[in-house]
Image (tube, rainbow, N blue to C red; front, top):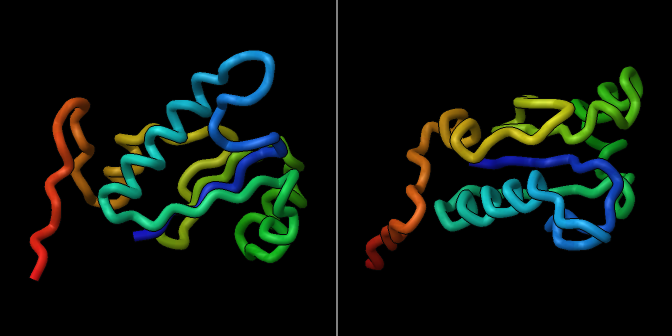
Amino acid sequence: MKIEIYDPPMCCSSGLCGPALDPVLVKMNDAVLALKKQGVEVERFNLAQQPKAFMENPDVKPLISKDGKNILPVTIVNGTVFKTGGYPAYEELCRALGIEPVRQGKPIPLKMMQ
C-alpha cells in the first residue's frame, strides 16, 4: 500500500509554518501520520523543494503541463491518480486502500512479533 502526495510549493507540509496555522495541512499531516502507523508507505513531494520528482512522474507531469500548478495537490494511491486540486480526507484514503480508519483515542494494535 502506497500513497504519494505532490504538494504545491510551500515551506513545509506540516501546516505549522507561516503567519497562520493552516488547518487543512495540519489535518493532512495527521492523516499521513495515522496511515504510516497502519503500515502504509506515504511519500510527499514539495514542488518548491523537489521539482524533479514532479517532472519525473508520468502521471503528475502531464497534469501540471495541462492545468498548471492549480492542479496541486495531486494524490496517487497505489499508482493511480486518486484526487487532484485538494487533499483527500483520511477516511477516503482508508477506503481507497481497503483498510479501517483508526478511531480517535483508540490505540493502534501492534502486530504480533514472531
